[in-house]
Length: 477
Ligand SMILES: [Zn+2]
Image 1 (spheres, rainbow, N blue to C red):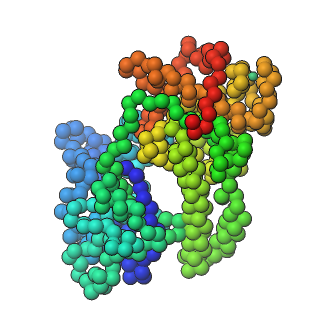
Image 2 (image 1 turned 45 degrees about the vertical axis):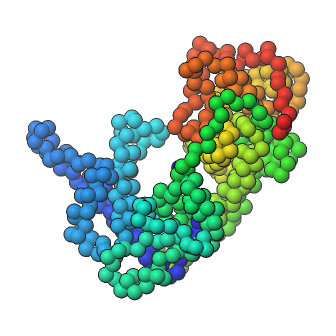
Image 3 (image 1 turned 180 degrees about the horizontal axis):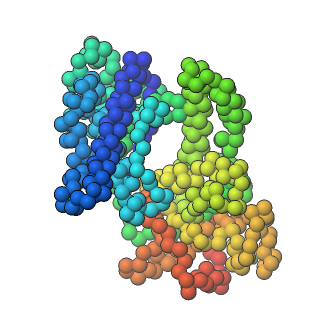
């Protein structure tokens, strides 16, 4: 599954319709959360009153499968206006709510990793505007002849003359970017559109096509190590490559960090000051909020564009890209004593997670791979020349000086080389691995699996490499 984005440019009449769809989706979401909440509360009360477990009000199933028919049975009553909104909008609201409920339930039962997920909140007028159109074969083509319009599904049984009279004008949403490439992939049968989510994001309307690849690119079973690059991620330089690549890095392999957010901080602060002077609920305030949204949207888009350029080059030029498994969430936690507010902002501004995501799918597309080095691998503390590991290396020390062999290297270059060597070691192990052994080679599925921490008692795993010679690989060989 992957998403393809298209910025939309709706007419005022279309925008009105889009807003009504978003509102309907929100309505169905809140309805679902409310009936589940009511059901839970009733059962709790009955239990407190001492009623037997078997005699309690039946508990509701939270799945979208059972919730959607329930919604259909009551919609005439709770939303008599439902005919003027497409059924898809309600369906997406109910589905999203049941997913949120499931996430909460899984989190409570310990089946879900990460931060605890609370019971879903109700959405209000200021919540994000979005709804999803699900593809059924009846939809027909999502794209217009000229590839510059996206189909908007209209309510079939609408009674509102504003919709019935101008179905033709409402049906196609104009996009400012051509969808030719996506259309070609879909018509040739390589991809299939599963759903289209339309949302108001970063101060503009956009359509996100959720597509599935039908023909999987089958990677060959036995692979040579091939051209390989080690990538060290950082804040001073966004990335440092173990060898320089023309167009994206300088001669040392450093990829500059553009600090997209820092460039706009002043403007952002000005908008915030203006906002604080506005009267609550005034038109002016709404205007400034919109301006701030657009600014954030612009920052996000330029960050993504930069990362796309980097990931495309890396995934295209190398068969194997070795990166480290950064604990971004841990690094930006307020409890982390080592990070300042500015550092935390820079870490999030860099977009490491997005880079990993892009690298994963782009390497997979090309039959290449991403190797993720263990989070506890001491990439910056180790000498990439002789293998000596330092006990401590402050973040302020930009040059790595080895006390063992006397080499002096840029801190990040040293780390990138270590990551490259560790990748080679993992690959060599993989090649000679016995059947059933799980190497730490991860591709697009990496988010589902976790890199296992070092087991105790085998602590010297990395030290043992000091005796092995360093293998050099020529770029693009
Ligand atoms: Zn050394």
